[in-house]
Amino acid sequence: MNKKIEVAFVNLLEENQNILHKICRLYTFDEETHKDMFQEMVIQLWKSYPTFKGNSKFSTWAYRVALNTAISLFRTKKRNVETVDWDVAVNYISYPEYDNREDEQLNRIYATVRQLNDIEKALVYLYLEDKSYVEIAETLGISEGNARVRMNRVKTKIKNRLNGGR
Amino acid sequence: MDELDKLKTTWSGISEPKQFSKQEINKMLHGKSRSIIKWVFIISVIELLVGVCFSIAIPLKVEDEYSVMYSVALWGMEIISYCGIVYFVYGFFVNYRHVKNTSNVNDHIESIVKTRRLVELYIKFNIYLFGISTLFFGFEKVLKVFQEKPFSYGIFYAIFFSIVLFFVFKLILRVMKFYYRIIYQRLVSKLQRNKEELIEIE
Image (cartoon, rainbow over all chains, first blue to last red):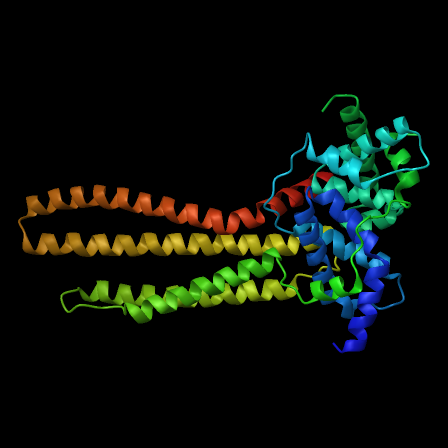
Protein backbone atom coordinates (compact mmCIF):
# COMPACT_ATOMS: atom_id res chain seq x y z
CA MET A 1 0.00 0.00 0.00
CA ASN A 2 1.34 3.40 -0.85
CA LYS A 3 2.24 6.17 1.55
CA LYS A 4 -0.89 8.20 0.77
CA ILE A 5 -3.20 5.38 1.88
CA GLU A 6 -1.09 4.85 4.98
CA VAL A 7 -1.38 8.54 5.92
CA ALA A 8 -5.15 8.48 5.33
CA PHE A 9 -5.46 5.37 7.51
CA VAL A 10 -3.39 6.85 10.34
CA ASN A 11 -5.49 10.05 10.24
CA LEU A 12 -8.73 8.08 10.43
CA LEU A 13 -7.42 5.94 13.25
CA GLU A 14 -6.18 8.91 15.23
CA GLU A 15 -9.62 10.50 15.03
CA ASN A 16 -11.39 7.27 15.98
CA GLN A 17 -8.94 5.85 18.51
CA ASN A 18 -11.42 6.17 21.36
CA ILE A 19 -13.29 3.16 19.94
CA LEU A 20 -10.18 1.03 20.36
CA HIS A 21 -9.33 2.46 23.79
CA LYS A 22 -12.80 1.71 25.11
CA ILE A 23 -12.57 -1.91 23.98
CA CYS A 24 -9.02 -2.23 25.36
CA ARG A 25 -10.17 -0.85 28.73
CA LEU A 26 -12.90 -3.49 28.88
CA TYR A 27 -10.64 -6.38 27.96
CA THR A 28 -7.34 -5.55 29.65
CA PHE A 29 -6.33 -4.88 33.22
CA ASP A 30 -3.01 -3.04 33.04
CA GLU A 31 -1.34 -0.42 30.90
CA GLU A 32 1.13 -2.72 29.19
CA THR A 33 -1.56 -5.16 28.02
CA HIS A 34 -3.76 -2.24 27.01
CA LYS A 35 -1.02 -0.92 24.74
CA ASP A 36 -0.27 -4.39 23.36
CA MET A 37 -3.93 -4.93 22.52
CA PHE A 38 -4.22 -1.46 20.98
CA GLN A 39 -1.20 -2.17 18.81
CA GLU A 40 -2.60 -5.53 17.69
CA MET A 41 -5.87 -3.81 16.79
CA VAL A 42 -3.96 -1.23 14.73
CA ILE A 43 -2.10 -4.03 12.90
CA GLN A 44 -5.29 -6.00 12.23
CA LEU A 45 -7.17 -2.90 11.10
CA TRP A 46 -4.34 -2.04 8.73
CA LYS A 47 -4.32 -5.62 7.43
CA SER A 48 -8.07 -5.45 6.80
CA TYR A 49 -8.05 -1.87 5.52
CA PRO A 50 -8.30 -2.93 1.83
CA THR A 51 -11.74 -4.40 2.67
CA PHE A 52 -12.95 -1.05 4.01
CA LYS A 53 -15.21 0.24 1.27
CA GLY A 54 -15.63 3.77 2.53
CA ASN A 55 -19.43 3.65 2.12
CA SER A 56 -19.84 2.71 5.76
CA LYS A 57 -18.51 4.74 8.66
CA PHE A 58 -14.91 4.00 9.58
CA SER A 59 -15.97 3.58 13.22
CA THR A 60 -18.64 0.98 12.30
CA TRP A 61 -16.08 -1.03 10.38
CA ALA A 62 -13.37 -0.57 13.01
CA TYR A 63 -15.26 -1.79 16.06
CA ARG A 64 -15.91 -5.17 14.45
CA VAL A 65 -12.22 -5.73 13.69
CA ALA A 66 -11.27 -4.38 17.13
CA LEU A 67 -13.73 -6.66 18.93
CA ASN A 68 -12.53 -9.71 17.02
CA THR A 69 -8.96 -8.83 17.93
CA ALA A 70 -9.81 -8.30 21.60
CA ILE A 71 -11.61 -11.64 21.82
CA SER A 72 -8.99 -13.66 20.01
CA LEU A 73 -5.77 -12.09 21.30
CA PHE A 74 -3.71 -14.31 23.54
CA ARG A 75 -3.30 -12.57 26.88
CA THR A 76 -0.87 -13.91 29.43
CA LYS A 77 -1.62 -11.55 32.26
CA LYS A 78 -4.26 -12.59 34.74
CA ARG A 79 -6.89 -10.17 35.89
CA ASN A 80 -7.00 -9.08 39.49
CA VAL A 81 -10.74 -8.81 39.81
CA GLU A 82 -11.04 -7.34 43.26
CA THR A 83 -8.57 -4.48 43.18
CA VAL A 84 -7.21 -3.60 39.76
CA ASP A 85 -10.63 -3.31 38.10
CA TRP A 86 -11.83 -0.80 40.53
CA ASP A 87 -8.67 1.29 40.54
CA VAL A 88 -8.38 1.35 36.77
CA ALA A 89 -12.04 2.21 36.37
CA VAL A 90 -11.76 5.05 38.86
CA ASN A 91 -8.59 6.35 37.24
CA TYR A 92 -9.77 6.28 33.70
CA ILE A 93 -13.34 7.33 33.81
CA SER A 94 -14.47 10.58 35.23
CA TYR A 95 -17.87 12.12 35.04
CA PRO A 96 -17.42 15.75 36.00
CA GLU A 97 -21.10 16.58 35.62
CA TYR A 98 -22.14 14.16 38.38
CA ASP A 99 -21.83 14.40 42.11
CA ASN A 100 -19.42 12.01 43.82
CA ARG A 101 -21.99 9.39 44.77
CA GLU A 102 -23.27 9.02 41.25
CA ASP A 103 -19.72 9.06 39.95
CA GLU A 104 -18.81 6.20 42.25
CA GLN A 105 -21.90 4.22 41.27
CA LEU A 106 -21.04 4.52 37.58
CA ASN A 107 -17.51 3.40 38.29
CA ARG A 108 -18.83 0.36 40.14
CA ILE A 109 -21.08 -0.53 37.19
CA TYR A 110 -18.13 -0.17 34.84
CA ALA A 111 -15.91 -2.32 37.07
CA THR A 112 -18.64 -5.00 37.11
CA VAL A 113 -18.86 -4.95 33.31
CA ARG A 114 -15.11 -5.53 33.12
CA GLN A 115 -15.52 -8.71 35.15
CA LEU A 116 -17.90 -10.29 32.62
CA ASN A 117 -16.67 -12.92 30.17
CA ASP A 118 -15.35 -11.95 26.71
CA ILE A 119 -18.61 -12.50 24.82
CA GLU A 120 -20.74 -10.74 27.42
CA LYS A 121 -18.35 -7.78 27.29
CA ALA A 122 -18.74 -7.62 23.50
CA LEU A 123 -22.51 -7.65 23.92
CA VAL A 124 -22.41 -4.89 26.55
CA TYR A 125 -19.93 -2.84 24.53
CA LEU A 126 -22.19 -2.85 21.48
CA TYR A 127 -25.18 -2.03 23.67
CA LEU A 128 -23.32 0.92 25.22
CA GLU A 129 -22.37 2.07 21.73
CA ASP A 130 -26.13 2.26 21.10
CA LYS A 131 -26.12 -0.38 18.39
CA SER A 132 -29.47 -1.95 17.52
CA TYR A 133 -30.12 -5.59 18.41
CA VAL A 134 -30.03 -6.37 14.69
CA GLU A 135 -26.52 -4.93 14.51
CA ILE A 136 -25.42 -6.59 17.77
CA ALA A 137 -26.69 -9.96 16.52
CA GLU A 138 -25.02 -9.47 13.16
CA THR A 139 -21.68 -8.51 14.72
CA LEU A 140 -21.65 -11.44 17.11
CA GLY A 141 -23.05 -13.92 14.61
CA ILE A 142 -26.09 -14.86 16.69
CA SER A 143 -29.83 -14.39 16.19
CA GLU A 144 -31.52 -11.13 17.18
CA GLY A 145 -33.83 -12.89 19.63
CA ASN A 146 -30.94 -14.58 21.38
CA ALA A 147 -29.04 -11.29 21.55
CA ARG A 148 -32.01 -9.71 23.38
CA VAL A 149 -32.40 -12.66 25.76
CA ARG A 150 -28.69 -12.69 26.55
CA MET A 151 -28.60 -8.93 27.06
CA ASN A 152 -31.41 -9.17 29.62
CA ARG A 153 -29.53 -11.92 31.43
CA VAL A 154 -26.35 -9.85 31.46
CA LYS A 155 -28.27 -6.89 32.90
CA THR A 156 -29.63 -9.12 35.66
CA LYS A 157 -26.16 -10.50 36.28
CA ILE A 158 -24.72 -6.97 36.64
CA LYS A 159 -27.54 -5.98 38.98
CA ASN A 160 -27.01 -9.06 41.14
CA ARG A 161 -23.27 -8.53 41.32
CA LEU A 162 -23.73 -4.90 42.30
CA ASN A 163 -26.06 -6.05 45.04
CA GLY A 164 -23.41 -8.40 46.33
CA GLY A 165 -24.59 -11.61 44.62
CA ARG A 166 -22.86 -13.66 41.91
CA MET B 1 -33.49 2.99 34.44
CA ASP B 2 -31.25 -0.06 34.99
CA GLU B 3 -27.54 0.04 35.78
CA LEU B 4 -26.31 -0.47 32.25
CA ASP B 5 -28.57 2.28 30.90
CA LYS B 6 -27.13 4.67 33.47
CA LEU B 7 -23.67 3.91 32.14
CA LYS B 8 -24.96 4.21 28.58
CA THR B 9 -26.08 7.81 29.11
CA THR B 10 -22.48 8.86 29.75
CA TRP B 11 -20.69 6.32 27.57
CA SER B 12 -20.28 8.45 24.44
CA GLY B 13 -18.70 11.21 26.52
CA ILE B 14 -15.95 9.00 27.88
CA SER B 15 -12.58 9.84 26.41
CA GLU B 16 -9.25 8.12 26.94
CA PRO B 17 -6.87 10.53 28.67
CA LYS B 18 -3.80 9.12 26.93
CA GLN B 19 -4.35 9.52 23.20
CA PHE B 20 -1.74 8.13 20.81
CA SER B 21 -0.17 10.54 18.35
CA LYS B 22 -0.04 9.93 14.60
CA GLN B 23 3.65 9.06 14.92
CA GLU B 24 2.91 6.46 17.59
CA ILE B 25 0.09 4.92 15.54
CA ASN B 26 2.34 4.84 12.50
CA LYS B 27 4.99 3.02 14.49
CA MET B 28 2.43 0.50 15.73
CA LEU B 29 1.29 -0.12 12.17
CA HIS B 30 4.66 -1.68 11.38
CA GLY B 31 4.90 -3.60 14.64
CA LYS B 32 4.79 -7.37 15.05
CA SER B 33 1.41 -9.08 15.30
CA ARG B 34 0.71 -11.42 18.23
CA SER B 35 -2.22 -13.18 16.55
CA ILE B 36 -2.84 -16.74 17.80
CA ILE B 37 -3.14 -18.17 14.29
CA LYS B 38 0.16 -16.60 13.32
CA TRP B 39 1.86 -18.16 16.33
CA VAL B 40 0.41 -21.61 15.66
CA PHE B 41 1.72 -21.34 12.11
CA ILE B 42 5.18 -20.11 13.20
CA ILE B 43 5.56 -22.85 15.84
CA SER B 44 4.57 -25.56 13.36
CA VAL B 45 7.11 -24.25 10.82
CA ILE B 46 9.81 -24.22 13.54
CA GLU B 47 8.93 -27.83 14.41
CA LEU B 48 9.22 -28.80 10.76
CA LEU B 49 12.64 -27.11 10.49
CA VAL B 50 13.85 -28.76 13.71
CA GLY B 51 12.67 -32.13 12.31
CA VAL B 52 14.52 -31.53 9.04
CA CYS B 53 17.70 -30.45 10.91
CA PHE B 54 17.53 -33.57 13.06
CA SER B 55 17.16 -35.88 10.08
CA ILE B 56 20.14 -34.21 8.40
CA ALA B 57 22.26 -34.42 11.57
CA ILE B 58 21.13 -37.95 12.45
CA PRO B 59 20.16 -39.64 9.17
CA LEU B 60 17.89 -42.67 9.30
CA LYS B 61 20.10 -45.79 9.52
CA VAL B 62 18.65 -49.05 8.37
CA GLU B 63 21.12 -51.68 9.57
CA ASP B 64 21.67 -54.92 7.66
CA GLU B 65 20.67 -56.92 10.71
CA TYR B 66 17.17 -55.40 10.70
CA SER B 67 14.41 -57.58 9.33
CA VAL B 68 12.92 -56.56 5.98
CA MET B 69 9.62 -55.78 7.69
CA TYR B 70 11.28 -53.46 10.22
CA SER B 71 13.37 -51.74 7.55
CA VAL B 72 10.29 -51.11 5.40
CA ALA B 73 8.41 -49.91 8.49
CA LEU B 74 11.21 -47.48 9.38
CA TRP B 75 11.25 -45.97 5.91
CA GLY B 76 7.47 -45.90 5.82
CA MET B 77 7.26 -44.06 9.14
CA GLU B 78 9.89 -41.55 8.00
CA ILE B 79 7.95 -40.80 4.82
CA ILE B 80 4.58 -40.63 6.61
CA SER B 81 6.12 -38.35 9.24
CA TYR B 82 7.34 -35.79 6.69
CA CYS B 83 4.18 -35.99 4.59
CA GLY B 84 2.24 -35.36 7.78
CA ILE B 85 4.30 -32.36 8.78
CA VAL B 86 4.03 -30.82 5.31
CA TYR B 87 0.26 -31.43 5.28
CA PHE B 88 -0.20 -29.80 8.69
CA VAL B 89 2.02 -26.82 7.96
CA TYR B 90 0.02 -26.29 4.76
CA GLY B 91 -3.21 -26.61 6.76
CA PHE B 92 -2.04 -24.07 9.34
CA PHE B 93 -0.99 -21.71 6.55
CA VAL B 94 -4.37 -21.99 4.79
CA ASN B 95 -6.17 -21.34 8.09
CA TYR B 96 -3.91 -18.36 8.79
CA ARG B 97 -4.80 -16.88 5.41
CA HIS B 98 -8.52 -17.53 5.80
CA VAL B 99 -9.04 -15.92 9.19
CA LYS B 100 -10.79 -12.63 8.55
CA ASN B 101 -11.09 -9.97 11.20
CA THR B 102 -13.98 -8.40 9.36
CA SER B 103 -16.27 -11.41 9.75
CA ASN B 104 -18.68 -11.63 12.67
CA VAL B 105 -17.34 -12.73 16.08
CA ASN B 106 -18.90 -16.20 15.81
CA ASP B 107 -17.40 -16.91 12.37
CA HIS B 108 -14.09 -15.40 13.41
CA ILE B 109 -13.81 -17.66 16.45
CA GLU B 110 -15.01 -20.64 14.37
CA SER B 111 -12.21 -20.11 11.86
CA ILE B 112 -9.67 -20.01 14.70
CA VAL B 113 -11.23 -23.02 16.41
CA LYS B 114 -10.75 -24.86 13.10
CA THR B 115 -7.04 -24.31 13.62
CA ARG B 116 -7.41 -25.77 17.11
CA ARG B 117 -9.01 -28.89 15.61
CA LEU B 118 -6.11 -29.16 13.19
CA VAL B 119 -3.71 -28.73 16.11
CA GLU B 120 -5.43 -31.56 17.95
CA LEU B 121 -5.21 -33.73 14.87
CA TYR B 122 -1.53 -32.81 14.58
CA ILE B 123 -0.92 -33.79 18.22
CA LYS B 124 -2.77 -37.11 17.73
CA PHE B 125 -0.85 -37.76 14.52
CA ASN B 126 2.49 -37.33 16.30
CA ILE B 127 1.45 -39.44 19.27
CA TYR B 128 0.09 -42.27 17.08
CA LEU B 129 3.20 -42.17 14.92
CA PHE B 130 5.35 -42.36 18.00
CA GLY B 131 3.25 -45.23 19.41
CA ILE B 132 3.41 -47.24 16.18
CA SER B 133 7.18 -46.67 15.91
CA THR B 134 7.60 -47.95 19.47
CA LEU B 135 5.52 -51.02 18.66
CA PHE B 136 7.60 -51.82 15.56
CA PHE B 137 10.78 -51.34 17.57
CA GLY B 138 9.57 -53.64 20.35
CA PHE B 139 8.33 -56.28 17.92
CA GLU B 140 11.67 -56.32 16.10
CA LYS B 141 13.60 -56.75 19.36
CA VAL B 142 11.40 -59.55 20.64
CA LEU B 143 11.41 -61.34 17.29
CA LYS B 144 15.20 -61.33 17.29
CA VAL B 145 15.38 -62.83 20.77
CA PHE B 146 12.96 -65.60 19.76
CA GLN B 147 15.17 -66.38 16.74
CA GLU B 148 18.43 -66.46 18.71
CA LYS B 149 17.50 -67.67 22.22
CA PRO B 150 15.45 -70.55 23.65
CA PHE B 151 11.66 -70.18 23.55
CA SER B 152 11.22 -69.83 27.35
CA TYR B 153 13.81 -67.04 27.43
CA GLY B 154 11.99 -65.40 24.55
CA ILE B 155 8.70 -65.45 26.50
CA PHE B 156 10.40 -63.98 29.58
CA TYR B 157 12.14 -61.34 27.47
CA ALA B 158 8.91 -60.46 25.65
CA ILE B 159 7.02 -59.92 28.93
CA PHE B 160 9.84 -57.97 30.56
CA PHE B 161 10.47 -55.86 27.48
CA SER B 162 6.76 -55.11 27.01
CA ILE B 163 6.48 -53.85 30.58
CA VAL B 164 9.57 -51.64 30.29
CA LEU B 165 8.47 -50.36 26.88
CA PHE B 166 4.98 -49.66 28.20
CA PHE B 167 6.28 -47.46 31.01
CA VAL B 168 8.84 -45.69 28.85
CA PHE B 169 6.12 -45.05 26.25
CA LYS B 170 3.78 -43.71 28.93
CA LEU B 171 6.47 -41.39 30.27
CA ILE B 172 7.37 -40.02 26.85
CA LEU B 173 3.65 -39.67 26.05
CA ARG B 174 3.21 -37.52 29.14
CA VAL B 175 6.15 -35.34 28.19
CA MET B 176 4.78 -34.94 24.66
CA LYS B 177 1.27 -34.12 25.88
CA PHE B 178 2.72 -31.62 28.34
CA TYR B 179 4.73 -29.97 25.58
CA TYR B 180 1.74 -29.66 23.27
CA ARG B 181 -0.49 -28.42 26.07
CA ILE B 182 2.04 -25.70 26.90
CA ILE B 183 2.68 -24.74 23.30
CA TYR B 184 -0.70 -25.01 21.57
CA GLN B 185 -3.58 -25.68 23.86
CA ARG B 186 -2.81 -22.71 26.09
CA LEU B 187 -2.98 -20.50 23.00
CA VAL B 188 -6.43 -21.60 21.93
CA SER B 189 -8.26 -22.73 25.08
CA LYS B 190 -9.67 -19.24 25.75
CA LEU B 191 -11.13 -19.16 22.26
CA GLN B 192 -12.74 -22.52 22.81
CA ARG B 193 -14.44 -21.11 25.92
CA ASN B 194 -15.70 -18.12 23.92
CA LYS B 195 -17.01 -20.43 21.22
CA GLU B 196 -18.83 -22.50 23.84
CA GLU B 197 -20.33 -19.29 25.22
CA LEU B 198 -21.68 -18.38 21.76
CA ILE B 199 -23.06 -21.89 21.30
CA GLU B 200 -24.77 -21.56 24.68
CA ILE B 201 -26.35 -18.25 23.61
CA GLU B 202 -27.71 -19.91 20.48
